[in-house]
Length: 187
Image (cartoon, rainbow, N blue to C red; front, side, top):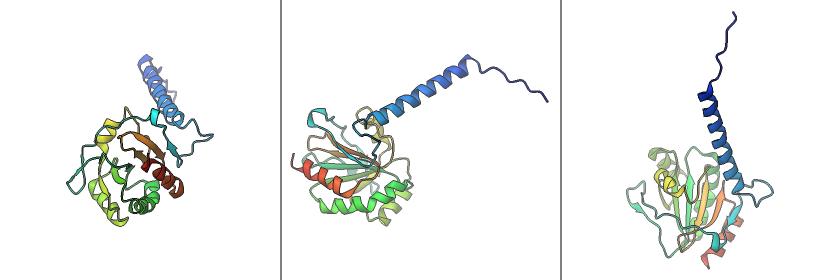
């Protein structure tokens, strides 16, 4: 059985080229965003200097309990993107809940990505999340031009001027995250 293979054709080669370029751009953007690190340290808190901070869009999301979630402009805010199926999210959540309880003057918000309400609520109950949580899929679209979120968990610390002041890609680490909160609370 001698089968002949059809040539790929210009259209298929063009599609493969475009996909390759997009993959390269996404990879460069993700790794380039952490270019200050000698290696990609996904748990490092990256503090953003005030002159480089970008204002985030106002959040317009309902919590899973049906109440609106909005930013409190007089407080530092922690915005955590997570999912119930995400292993690093499962690992970081007890620490994040503990830190939220240690800093009652900081507003904590958890937004799920690519998750169901049922699974998110079960996760929140299991890990005793007592701050506002809701579906973040639409907010991620609004945030994309300012701060793309490439993986879960990702946590943003937003200053009192509604600007991204710090970010953590991957699970948070307690000491470093607390240090960042301490610094940003007094700005």
